[in-house]
Image 1 (cartoon, rainbow, N blue to C red):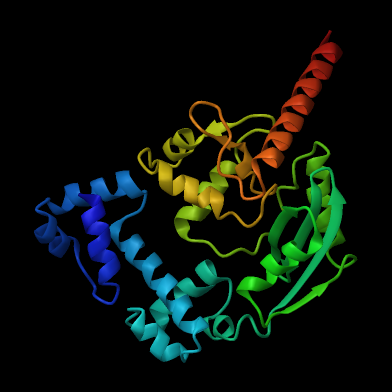
Image 2 (tube, rainbow, N blue to C red):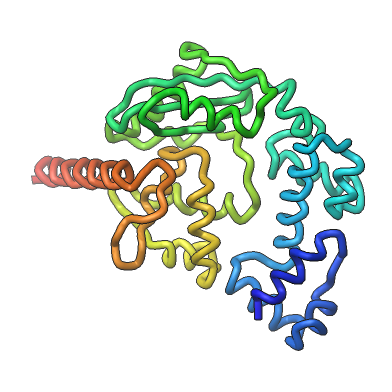
Length: 281
């Protein structure tokens, strides 16, 4: 049922469909329809429409359309409606996004770590990327893919404090709670990522448990997608989410790294608790 409704919404991004109209299409009463949609996808029909519109807008802007035409083609009825969502979901204004991030200043550093190469990138507003890899070039390419015209420069000294924070975590410390983030995300992604940051060091949760924790027990696939699209690994510890059978799955930087991160955290957490117990005696 939800699949049919999802297809209807996706094929009509420019139409302000209401629950009543969707109810007539599906034959399900409006209040039941909304609950069904939230249980299955983890978001409301309106949130799904907004996300599709933002995706269409970004596609239009990448093609070089003017902001106004791209806005109306994507189904936004007014500029105020668009701009109130732009910074939360795009990290910048539509005009800057259209120019491939032109005018943005992004600094990054790549340093060695126990998991290979670590890239940390940040704007003036906060950390926007934490990548892991085997060599520098693919990491740099990933950073520039979305904003080909941004002012991206390597600046090890400028963002050294944030790099030290991430490295400290890899050595057994949690990132500082006040570490600023500047990431593009939907409201649902932010809810998931916030919940991931609540998972204790040395512990894991299943995708199902995360979905329940955010009040969306049926949104397991949506939670998995939010984990897969997390751009600030380590700081937002998506590696701490595992399958219901305990097996590892779905880590952008490779399952081997995910396993290494979890093993190291578990070992250090256990060693720390043992040390505390001995002090207590």
